[in-house]
Image 1 (cartoon, rainbow, N blue to C red):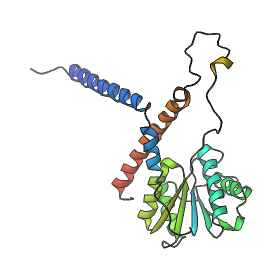
Image 2: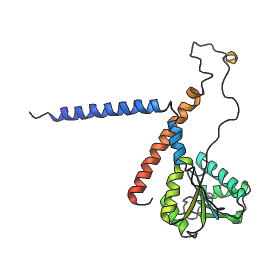
Image 3: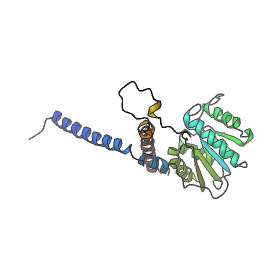
Image 4: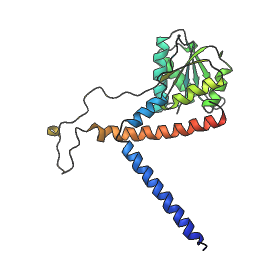
Length: 237
């Protein structure tokens, strides 16, 4: 018996939606556990440390400036530059030819504003992705030099492996982690003017913050695992 085409399509869509529903349920449960953070932390390459002081600090540009990633990376790059005053700094972010007020130039100004001497900062304006940036930096920096990468935690594993794949023999990681507020973020129920009969969630940091952070972590992890698979397939890592 030959099934009608519409029936085959219906069965396919039904099974596809069932798989999507199960996957969504599993991801929702995962957000209530510490595993999203653990996967995010794994991407940050916490064990990629240099045994010597870096000769170059390479800041990967992210979303430019102003943006969360751009500001975080330049903030940490300035701190690392102060710790290693002999190291040169390379900022890698594409810009249009002849640009005057590009995000790359703003990152340069952000670093000087934070105390990094202008003559230590070098700009790499050509690479449009991590692989291209690594190739461009290799053209300007000795592959035997100790290189310390500064980038977002989720991007670090791909960055370290890409720079190693491009030829650098000593690559370290300094991830630009954000920090949480220092104070007690729980709210006393006695101090809340609760005029609605809503559930009391004042003392639950998981429901107010951690759950939503975990959703963001899972999104970043999913993107980076996809990118790592693509880079592996291309032979870049």
